[in-house]
Image (cartoon, rainbow over all chains, first blue to last red; front, top):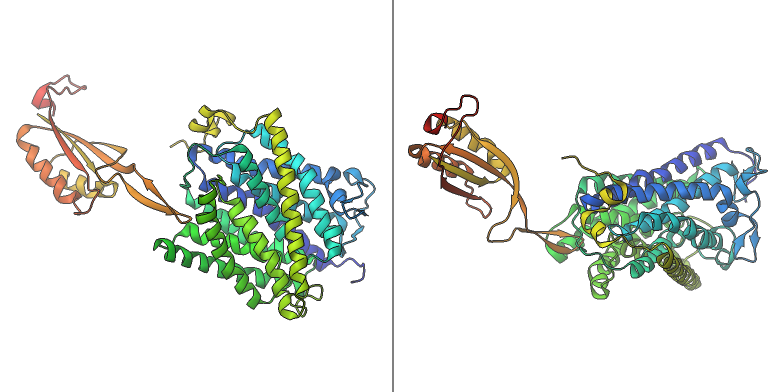
Length: 408
Length: 112
């Protein structure tokens, strides 16, 4: 363990990383989803991400951080001390990152919680009540995100078991993707389930900002500005590039034409898959992880989604759950001890790590699926999850917000 | 007098306008419209699934001419708007009972 002395280089990088991860949600995810949706719902779609970020920010400083990262209570949850950050001196260093102030660590982790719940919104666009979303965000963060992040990152039972998740393959992406699936099973199919992007240009900007911000997400998860952050940075970019190329290849093989949306989707899938592995694998491992993820996600979206008929509008399950699970599994295969001494995968003589990763994947997947179903069910009985038929047909922007995205 | 309504490709508007101006046919009303023909639009593909885009953007020109100029105007439009591919559009010709120039109150051919 490194000495608990403030390092201004680490602190500067972590402040920067925190801002980079914020950029992933606003406007990254907001624009990525906003461009893919119908023009009558563009503002509502973007709004979902903004509210997710704002609500999570408040929860996090009131009680979210200590529940996720406070002193462990029986491996399940953190001890809720320091409500509203009371009693924390600004100069106190973070217990889990002893070269940076605790407040930087709190802010950094806050942006992770916010993007996780914002990601879910992509599945339920075009039809969810705004009020139901405003209720869903704080309840889901409290009952699902806080325990899971504690289990994996806060010293909980999965961390003790040895599950490797560098930046959130299970905590963020699988968690969001499975929750998205549970929610769409409750809320049902839209009247018009076509994916016809109303403004792919927004999605281009959104996806590129995701890629850019993801350097903060993954390299920032080194919690320091040194060799490990650099290695994670390089692995992140490498896997993303490989996944972009392999999705475009899938496009050509399956439909005969390369598509820009395919390239964007591949890049996001690559970023998702390398997230748990970024600080553990070599660039060679990153290329394999990236190349394979697009094939898996493409199959999930074009075959599994069609066969089972669930309406995951913008493919949150297809990209984040599938990509996150693959990345988590692949970390158990490709983790190289000479990159990070904390992780040794099957390829380097530790096949047991695959089993540990599978336990992590299954635990997170089952917990988030069941809990999200329960939360969604309760909201459906009380507030109601879905807008009325006329609102859905005529558009959420004018009906729910009395504004519209375009005056042309 | 005839009314000529032409549905053309939006990108052909400039060359059609120039050709009409060359034959001294200056008055034209242009609207952006959407429509489809026998082929019911085109196919677009997103995330591996094909979707029919059955209403495509087109440009509609409305021109009123004296009877003897009708064929020249039609020729000019066909020559410039034609690519030979599906989606070139159509021209509709119909009789016009009367024309009024609002500024002066002139009627009929003088007002065209």
